[in-house]
Image 1 (spheres, rainbow, N blue to C red):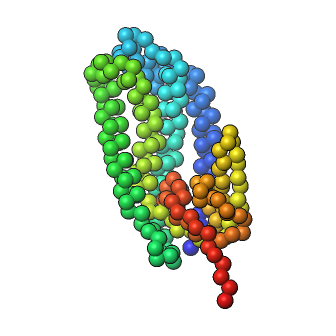
Image 2: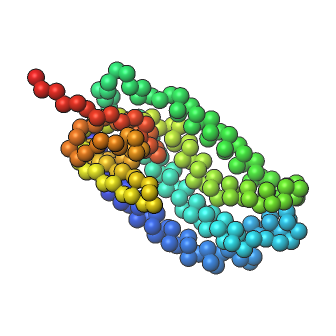
Image 3: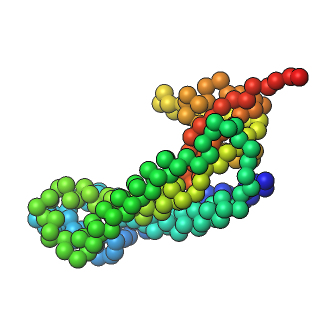
Length: 234
């Protein structure tokens, strides 16, 4: 089975870095009362909190909105490519006790997508059409504003996590990198040309060259199951 081109993640990383820097710079200009999306968030807060608003929160909401506007198309393109590749993926030989469909987990992701999308659309609709309905909530409604920009990338991510089936990968660990930051240890391994981040429990005892088999979720690439393969000699 052919492996995804290494150029694709690099292009996504470059686009993310450039887009993030552009969003950060534009936020200083668009987070005020005169330009959108900052004006939108200022108006809502003023409606709910007696003509006052939080300057730092407005800046953060504007930044997240710009980041989400950049990330959403990237997620849709990446997810669509992953979905098409999953449909064309050849069957793999996996241990009989491995659930390669993870139907339950994908169903939960689908339910989360539906419920979050429903709430996100309803909240956005009220904010646009009748924001005064949320005035009794005041501070709570203001804090809920963070859902609007987060939904720009959370909704498509949940959608593709539910649609794309997981991948079974087997082979030797080509590289293993461990990073410790403020007492938290994260491990990244490369298997069959792809990078994965197992949990600390999954990574315990792993070493470069050791053969492993793992199951990773289709879009977020979360390691669902990982086992070392015991070498046998005959």
